[in-house]
Length: 127
Image 1 (cartoon, helix red, strand yellow):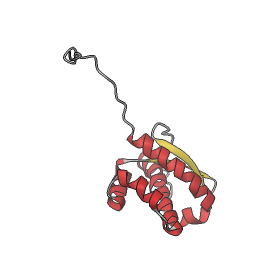
Image 2: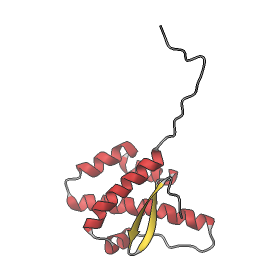
Image 3: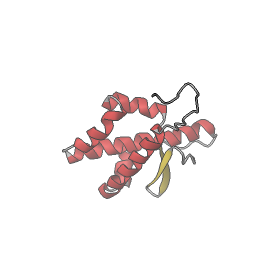
Image 4: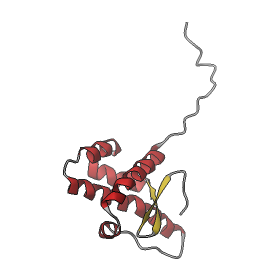
């Protein structure tokens, strides 16, 4: 699934995955953290290393599975979903730290807004 406008690419166990922030993923994150705005602080505040790893693994699994689910929706050849256990076994803690950047990139791309200003005669400068 190539959707580079709203995804970040990572490799897990030699296989490429696109991390995509979908509406479904946003709902899951909101359930777990109370909203996207709480996610960054939750990840950065985690003093407990094991808990921080669990959160990163959960997020990687969630975001990577979005591309698998989209593929399965659009294609006959179904791909298997990643499990948290598979992500833990196929990655190292060093890789997980690098994946944090990919998570943030996917979140940014998934929430960015294309804002264009309109030339409107009603909006004249005051004064």
